[in-house]
Length: 144
View 1 (cartoon, rainbow, N blue to C red):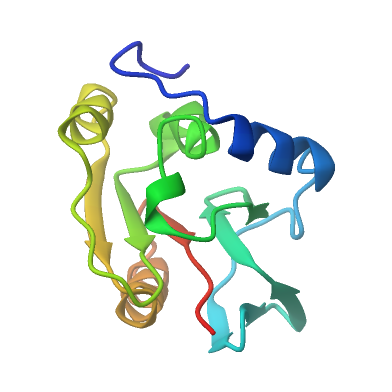
View 2 (spheres, rainbow, N blue to C red):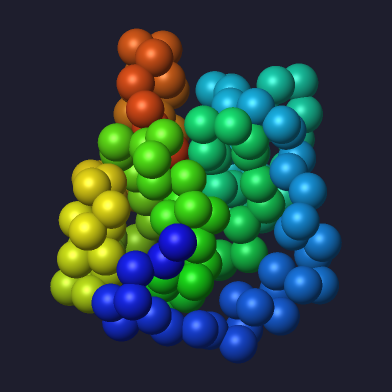
């Protein structure tokens, strides 16, 4: 359940979710990210163009293309899986971003730590934490 703290229902994100058929994961399990760039990612002998949401039980397309689109709604799958996650790594593409206070508070409420960095370091950190079998998820904005 999404905490009631400052919920932002972005019409743009909602329409992207509906139009992209976001009700089925690309991969029904977690996997390390093997490569990134040119607007996409490679993982588990697959490739995906666009951003990714990597959760403990599946990898999903994530319709976010810039940090301004990151809000509680775009991260609703993370909130729904919060009991399986200790750390959410947010890859911000090539931008530097500080999460708004209401978003940090929402994650604190569900006891998930936020670790925000550019997408390259985020992927490396995510892969290491997965290798250590830690309870980690990643929200990764694709880079050109």
